[in-house]
Length: 228
Image 1 (cartoon, helix red, strand yellow):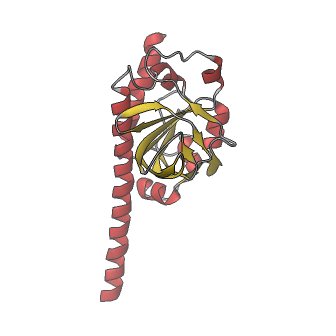
Image 2: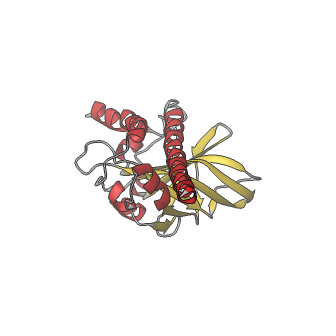
Image 3: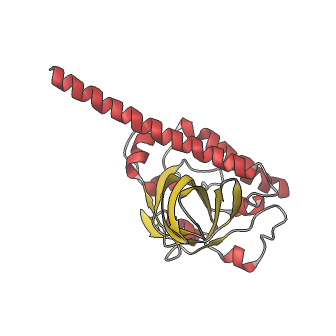
């Protein structure tokens, strides 16, 4: 009886810990996006964020190597609601392998990706795909004065950015695999949910995701409405 109770308590504690970790990750993603967008002269152009179908935010991606290295990071992906009513809840994703532009030594970097069209969004909704392969990604422009109207940016499936040691820039991602993190999603939503269901808006967002969704609305939907 004592053993059974101990096992139950351990199971509950592990679930609470996993939920806390998943919730912390959502909060870190919100902080990264807020910090980047709060400096419009050095951040992601708002008109591009307003056009993005989905956003991927990976705080503190761990990397190592000389010029060509390896990465591992966990973050979140969100897509626009089909009815135009803001953003879906976050789905936890992992990025593994590949390289982030030119790099020397180890460290951590924040990575943000804008998925710019339906084709890219469909690939993101798969449980796994490779950037630079089936998910073509290019370095995105930075700052409010950057031209976001060029054909290259308008045709791109994914525009990618990184921030390391306070420096923020568009960056090329090569060979990295992006996949859903089903265990974290289970902890975040309190039940088993599919990555695709979340990004299609079929699952109600958890309350802990509200600040992140509000930040996305502030810098994308509001700006878009102001232009119209």
